[in-house]
Structure formats: C-alpha cells, structure tokens
Image (cartoon, rainbow, N blue to C red; front, top):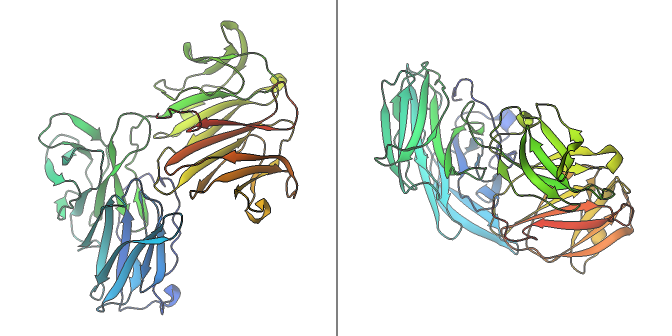
Length: 451
C-alpha cells in the first residue's frame, strides 16, 4: 500500500475504527486477485457514525474525521454501495450509488456537507501503490467553517518551489506532483489572502507516496475553524508536531471541604472562588510546563495542593480538559478527564464522573424512562474515573448500584436530553460528606454552554 508521510504522528480523532469485513464471498486471509478496492472518508461534521454497505453487507463503520481501510469488492461488476445512519428511531439512507471498479482499481468516497444536504464525491486513486521519484498529493475542501474558497500552499523550508492549489468548498483537486524527501510546510488561507489560517510543522514526503489531504472542521480549543488531516490506507492522521491550542477548566468535588478554591498556573490566578460542586470555564493554557497550585480562596498563603511542572505538558494538544479536585479534604487529589465537544445530530453525549468517597466503586445505569433498568448495560465506575456514553435521543433515567448489584442505591434521576446535547454528570457525596450519593449536572444542564 501507499508509503506515507515520514515521521507522521498518528492521532486517532473521536473513535478507533474497526472494519467489519469485505463483501460476501471474500475471505481476506484467502483473498486473491482479481479484486477492486474502495474506502470511505467521513467528513460531515455534525453526523453520527455511518454504516458502509456493499450489496447490503456492512463492510465498514466510520465516524467523523475517520476513514475505512480499503475494502475488497468484486471488480468489473456493478455493485451497490449504500451509506446509512441511525436517526434514533430508524435507519436512514444517506446516499446510494452504483460502483463499477476495474480490476486492481482503487476508489475513495468522500462524504461531506450535512445530513440534510450531503455532498458525495468519488474519485480514482491513480497511484496507490506508489512508485516514481516524486510524491503525489491531492487536496479536498470538506469544511463548513473554513472560508468558501481556500488556497493550499506547499512550500519548501527554504521558501522555494511553492505550489498553490485553490479549492472551493466540497471540491477535490487533481493529483499534483510534489518534491519528495525534502523538508517542507503546508499552509492554507482564504483565497488570495496574505493571512495564513493554519501552518503545519516541517514534514517530508516519502518518494512515490500518494497523499490525500482533507480540510475538516475543527472542534478543539482556540479560534481555528478547520485543520487539514492526511488520509492513509490505514485511516486519518494529523501532521507531525502540529501546533494547536489546549484548554483547561477546574472543578471542586471535595464534598467534606468547606473551603472554596483558587487555582494558579505558576503565579497566575486562572480560576477563583470555586466552592463545592462548582465547575469553572474553559481557558487556553499558554504557559510552558507550568506548576499548578491550589490554595484557599482569597488566601494564597494557604497552599492546599501543588503539582509538578509537567502537569499541563501531559495534556493533549487540540483537546479540552477538566481538572477536578476530588477525594476527602485530608487527602485531596487532582483528577483529569478529556472532553469531546463536537455536537452530533440525533445523538447526545453523556459524560459521567465518579468522585464519591463513600461509595468509591459502583455501576451506573442509563435506561429509557419506565423500562427495567437492569436490561440496560451497566457503566462501571471506580473513584476518579470518567466515562462517555453516546446516546440516542430518549428520556432517560439514571440509577446507581453497587458493583454487579441489582438494587439501586441512588436514583432514579430523570435526565432530559436533546439532539446535539453535551451533558456532564458528577457523582459525589452529600455536602459535608456521606451517603447517599448525589448527582451534579453541568455543561448543557447549566446553560449557556458554548466554549
């Protein structure tokens, strides 16, 4: 398969893809030529996961900013490929098309736009197996947030040999020859603009590689509307050492602590006066290797907790983080979780965290209102653990049991959820400590929530 960007950092975005096999009649371990191959790239920013079917058999399940591997289908024969999604009530067909790919042919299907108005492009990969002294690069503009028309520019590190490709939204360029084995950068900007929106770090292309660069909407911290990602035969990858923002917010979940907290990064006060149960706002972190210091609110001399200087450095770029103070007051802990803030049609995202000291381990059940909660799968949570549950849109009830228990020790708690919702539940002890546990609601339960 394609040789690829050298030193490329692999960053799976939102979901790890597992392909579900190839068309009926094929066994991959016994696959022999002749064959044809197809892959699907999901670039609809608000869409849920999409099923990929050939002749009615699922060959892939793909989420936004992900791609299937190349899947084998019968060559030189018309096959029906369908793209489907579940809208919470029934399966909907997003797009259906007839494919007839010659022997040893490769096709990429790029899904863009919205669920209501999808844009589907099919194009041939002319040199998937590589070869030749140069690399081949193709660009696609799939972003709804970036300017309608953009310029992609490949520039050698010394500023020479610039190539600029102009693309309108939902367009794909032809393959262009690019110099291999030299350091270069990629930028994009609005058409005919001197203001660069995004610049890659230095990278080099492997001789003979075929590269597809797709501009996708970006849901990380900061003001970047979209970022280019690279599609390989194995999936989608980021550019190496890409410089992106990171953001942090703080939460106070120490139930038996009457003190409010101030948070400092080095000597800068970044969150102040958080009392038990309160969650602060996200803010960008610009310091390099800052020390995080927790003090009593309004009393910086009363230092309650100090971290090492590598705390923020461990936070992922392009990611929102929640840093929660949990545990008993006599043994406070800093606990971290990563937050995905992409809003999805026909889905809600429920994030549940366990900060109960009294019931340190338990199972959480999210069931449809009025149904037997034990028929739903449990969500086991240890103290300090956070888990995410993508949900279809139904009125929900939450119950908490002992591990593997069948009797609810807390709940039911009624949960109203809406399409595109982002919901956060903190499970903690009563004010002052002790059982039964309580739930504290945040994010879309505490509007407006728009980081």
